[in-house]
Image (cartoon, rainbow, N blue to C red; front, side, top):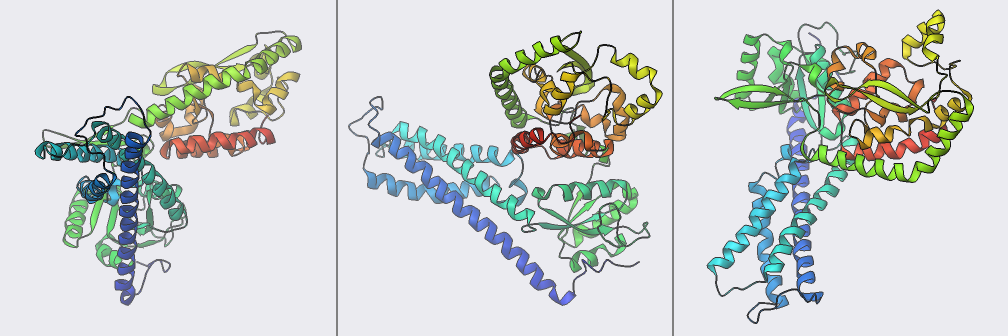
Length: 495
């Protein structure tokens, strides 16, 4: 078995590599602790200013209330390390809870709430210590808010550093089969996850470099401990479909003895975009498949963006939509709105609204022209479509034909940003990934829109849709909305 020369390091350099890795991690945590201390102080300071310096009349003034600036300053500097300890207890300095998802912010809220409860408890056992209740309440809100904003900014910095290859966790993937390659490709597409795949471990593939991911196949699972040490790897990800049950058990046992952490995939790589959760029922670990991709705060934030954005757009663009409707009626006979039956969340179909851009007998004309029909069935788009009306060409080029879909967004059937809406017939192009489309709402715009729209091949559209579903964040939605404007103005791929 040959080894990839691009990832194997000299054994003599291993202590230095490990030292540098742990030094960077320690420096990262130290910087995060400093950020938390600053934002905790900022929150308490803002609470003091609002309570005692604004002169708001509805704050209750008690003659025994401690209002001395020096007292609150000393009290806050006493509380600051307490907050850091509470954060540590809640796992807010554990890398597995940091820099991804909303779990970090929920931990900040819980830790901040416990911290303020400790303050209340302390004042209960010290009756001579009287502090303003409004200051306590304001401190609870503002400290959590300031720490959350501080960690958000810190996360943005870490994400930028990871895009340049810093603060990445080196891992090995056991299994270069279809599932292992899918996992590796996901990490390559999402550097924010902080995972750097150093190589595959597999003894059934007879190539040195995997052609799909361009990642080296380093050797056999039997030599995984040596490969992990050579590549400074402390974590291994196992594509469970690549090993037999006995081989998997033997691998887990050997890695535990070597102090190397191990993670197992679900064995259902087709559900990478959908997501699974592990739940214990009667002490039996069971995989639960998510019916929808977005849950909790992600779903709430996306829906709020859709509601506010669609309502504002409908209000501002109503004169334009009225003008377009009049132009369509004057240009050709037929209805103003065209209803297209498309697939939504849960596989349920609904009517997506568009301004009509074709003649009313478009389907009949397509059925009569065999060449045209074959070209249409290949990509479900025609570059020089003879069925499109004069005003329809303008509407497609400017994307004005999609404005009525804002009503679909407002009704909750679509989203401003999402995968491309498709018909039931088009699901066959998505193959094993088709089930993932039903976990999110189709969007008016998305990665396919800013990447060239109709100039993008259908296979590339599928990859872009899956990429969006896997890597969704509210910030990606905002970025894609921003990028849609120049894409529409350039009319790239619009026909």
